[in-house]
Each structure stands twice: as C-alpha cells, then as structure tokens.
Amino acid sequence: MFSSSLMRGALALAFIGSAQLAFAHALPKLQQPGPGATVSAPHEVAIEFGEALEPTFSKLIVTNAQGTQVNTANSTVDDHDKKHMSVALPDLAPGVYKVQWSVVAADGHRTQGHYNFTVK
Image (cartoon, rainbow, N blue to C red):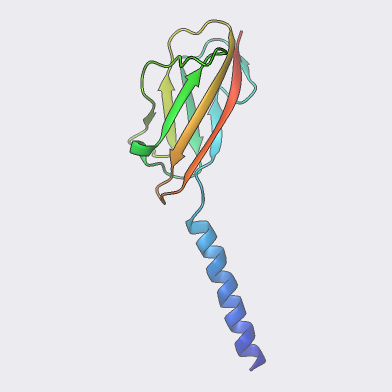
C-alpha cells in the first residue's frame, strides 16, 4: 500500500513538471542592442526568444525619449526561425530609446516586456 501511494505521488509530480515545461512562456534569450547598452545607431532591433512565436500576435516597437514610435516598418518573426523577431530602424539620433515587445508563444501564452538602450 505504501509503495502504491508513493508511486502515485511520483507520477503526479512527474505530470506537473511536464505540464510546466509544456506551458513555458516565450522570454528573451538575446537582445541586440541589449538592455542598458550604449551603441552606435543600430539598423535594427532583434530579439531571440526561448520559444517559437506566433507571428500574427507578436510585435516589437521602438520609441524615443518622448514616447514617439521610431520604427516605421512592422516587426517580423523569421519564417525559418520562429524564435527570432526583429524590426528595422531608420537612422536614429543620439538619445535613449525604449524597446517594447509583446509576443504570443506557439503554446498560446502571451508575455511582454521592455528595456532601454542608448544611441551615442
């Protein structure tokens, strides 16, 4: 009886652990330029996420210190690597810029975040 209860407990823990893996959220693994970076004016912002993204429901925008959106093109999720999203940028003047991202992972979970970088 004791080993049967122990076995059921172990199976329940294994199931809970695998469910958490199945519902992992898409979080940034690599950002270019990175959070807090001071860089020459970049031509794009690119973020590599830990999970595949749903392109229709994922976006990336860049705003200046006044809150005005500076990217004129829409962000895109790479057709060949659904974990990679980028947005082209015009020539940026020196200053602080905010990157805001909102993504939906292939499992349907939405995550969002933001960070700043500075153009020297």
